[in-house]
Length: 354
Image 1: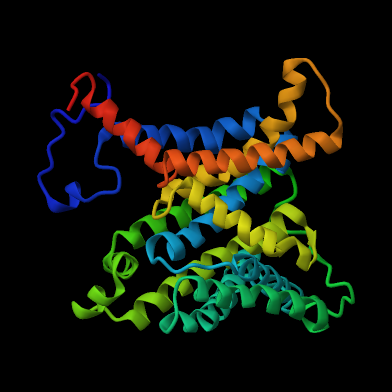
Image 2: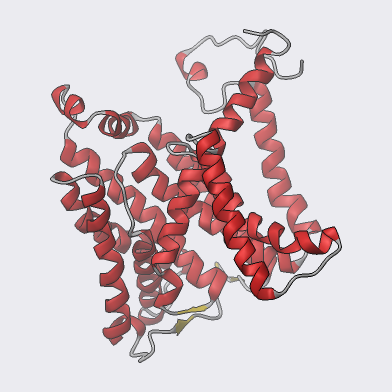
């Protein structure tokens, strides 16, 4: 009975169209932010900060960018890892080649470079779609893998393609401890999630969804396919590029092109599909599923009181992980976000059957 809208009247269009129109949702979001910014840094170990929470936040940001392209605009992409690599290496070059370059400026400029590459490889979407577009974006993955291994300028003349960063700081505040890195990534994720939520609710967001649902009908009613598709690639690549820069600078510290391989692209695509296409919340659900489930499967034998070999545990993890993905896709093709939305609707109607 606590999740009700009775007495919550809207007296303006602005109040009716706000992101969280229900007071309980606004309170829940405020509590969640307080927990994330205050409780978690005070009560979570450095291991969880470094190995679980920080990767979860960065992968959520990358999944958010991919969801804009795949979920909201309907353009299939298998080159997400490439755009992450462009963001990471571009931010690295801005950081090491320009004296006194601020960290945040390097990250955002890395995202802008990823935007340029994303739009370049998004141009084929104007003439092809579906599997053919997926193959076209896959070319970006192979091209960047070759470029960052063979063109030594991108890696500051490192023959192996491996680069590293150190001494990170923002306005004189060092970003060194796991808590500082977690909070830094959390601020980025909150800001970009809010911007993305407002963007998909705007006119351009409605154009993306119209192109996703039926591009011919969208063109007939006056939507420009060139503008809609390329802006989706641009926004998605920018967010993914910033996520790639965060992955290299904050999480890894030192990386090589293999850190942004095609496996990363498939991992992010699975996050979007499992979490929910066309859902901001689904990006976080998918990232949590991908990051936390392997940890749970690794600890399960110890909790049950028996031990298995490392090789068997690795194979079982892969098998169970794949089976659960198929199970979720069969039970709810719209992802975990749809299950969450259905549960909220049932709470709003309970105990009435309709």
